[in-house]
Image 1: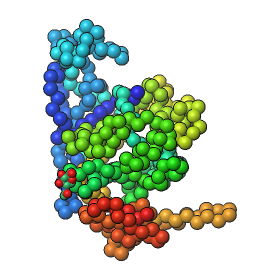
Image 2: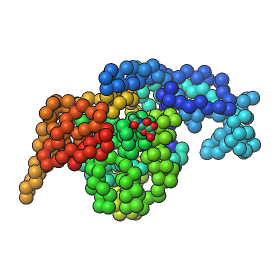
Image 3: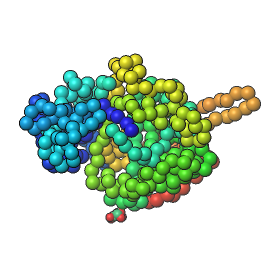
Image 4: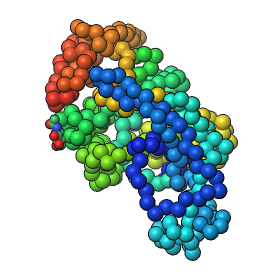
Length: 362
Ligand SMILES: *[C@@H]1O[C@H](CO)[C@@H](O)[C@H](O)[C@H]1NC(C)=O
């Protein structure tokens, strides 16, 4: 359903791929990209990584010449009657990263100048009922640079435990922003992905349980343990114009789950986007992998809303993440064996144990 213009893998996370022929028309030179490995005790250490473009975007041609193995949207029927024969007859060529694909790197930053996949289990703040949280000028202001933190929590807090929860934080202007909380009836009022959330969300929205059928969080954790590829892309969608992401979709549906963002139902047409936004760019930088809490820093903000009959007043107070005696905000972390932040929750919340490595203010 979806099409991406560039897929990038960090070397070292890649599994070996066998039986693919190498084309030599263009020399393959992987651009370097520094990323970081972090530990709670030792801080972050830079790693000399490289990126590689997915084969999906490369020229596949005959090993004996330059006849296309793939044209338009179809594999050549005689060269590629089946995958094994195709891999013997065809070679995948090198990529001119900057010239052909607009992919450049500098230090720890990757700039992309601008495939079918089944549904996962999503947490789109707008779709989950908080329409003011993520977007231009919103709590997480997407017009400005921000950090995305994804935390994979296991049942026993080690990298070999069972994956039980995926948490999301944002950091912008030095402030840690807790993910928004689900507001849709029928789904728990939580701000992270767990199997219970996924089950309730799919049932409430009437979505296929593809994620569960493919193993759910435990299956995803096992997959991550085998090694994964981090995909960074800028893309458009020929199947449904990306409306599933940030518009109303299906476009005639008015039920919970169909409102996904503020974009018009007429937007996102690839032939429009590729002209009107042909010079759009995105830069990803400072990629870090490490112990929970070791990859970012920032202050936590507690926001209280006071509602009177005619006005809404919003006030913010800021506490330092690691300040002894500081209080944690609603839904923030307040305990766990590798956790160093505040352990007392702002009133009226209390610190509730959800496992040896994670407690949360609820
Ligand atoms: C965590 O769980 C995994 C999988 O069950 C197990 O192999 C590992 O020994 C556990 N680690 C600790 C410290 O309990």
